[in-house]
Length: 474
Image 1 (cartoon, rainbow, N blue to C red):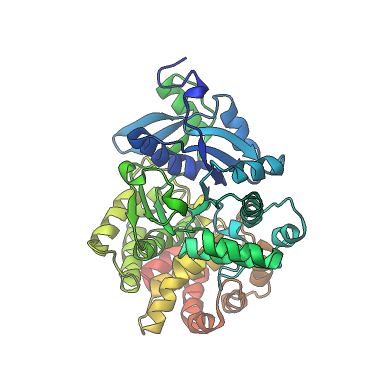
Image 2: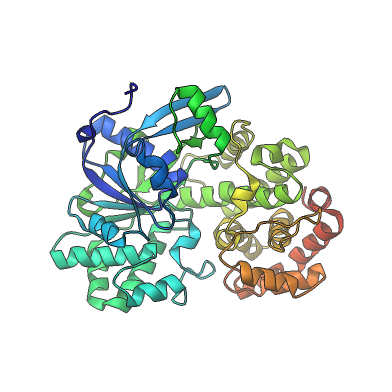
């Protein structure tokens, strides 16, 4: 067996973490940090990954006993590393009982999540549990769940019945105050199921907030072929990522049980809010804005987009509007942070597709862009660049690009978005219909956005996104 691959699986640490939503991001980010933490300080923090929907990740990883290649896409060339922190991968729809059993084991002390914004089954505009969501309705009446919220509550229910301590729930998704949000959703669900269980979770369980940051483009067939060329090993499940990685975690764990995150470079803090808002608004907000505007203008990736001088100026304008709505973490310069972001976006080795970032916009827009807009408009600050980003999203979800070609729009509210867009022919009517969607836009903000977004939309529909940026938001 090739050097660096473990021949004896008994050498691996025992499982201490179950991860829900095992996609490329967590394998390129959390798994690497956790493996580094164990290398530095030991501990049994092996990971059982859970795919909540598809067996594809499990099937791709099984051939190498759950090992895979992590590829750093540096401007000077790729660097590879073999990751062996996974002990197993379960597929929830195939065997939900195996998932619950794994989460209920006493030696599992942390459950991590990367289920994307839509996986929380909540209303992004209000932060409340969406009790009308089909998965939530199912999980409230069935012992075997399908949603991440359902798995968390049912597993905690088993631990309480067995007299075991709860696990720490560590969300790694891009949501404002993500731990506190998830705690509210879990408690709401649990209280509907069993008030005594909810009281126990509220008293005993921990939900630290986190901020995660590493650009991880989707792996392509060309990437798989390149990894084979670099390593001499066939690996159907490599992950590609930028050199930069930042993980900030509130140090609040059940019984203090956690890997030695700090030894791996994680920032352990009392309150993650400032880091979180900075990243959500300055990185994720501009990423989404560039995704919609760049895609409509014909740019395939973020690097391609910011290589266009019109869009390079546009993202700088976005940051100038966002920064007044951000409180910098102690010791951080927002200007320097924006400069660093631009260099990361421009890395030609990162093929992060605008189409990939554009997915699920109805779930992402409230925290990534609307939060900055709300703060600015409340303070009387105009924000034409941010309003243009909202208008570009509205053009995008209409399903037809500027060349008249169909767009494969993927969004949990796609039916409602398409109906709203198609309810009017003129941009003004389309904007009004989309602003009326309360799952995305609170009523007060929608009223404030009506005029500036309508004006931006008129420019986009009449002249195209690139020209609209030059005229209205550069």
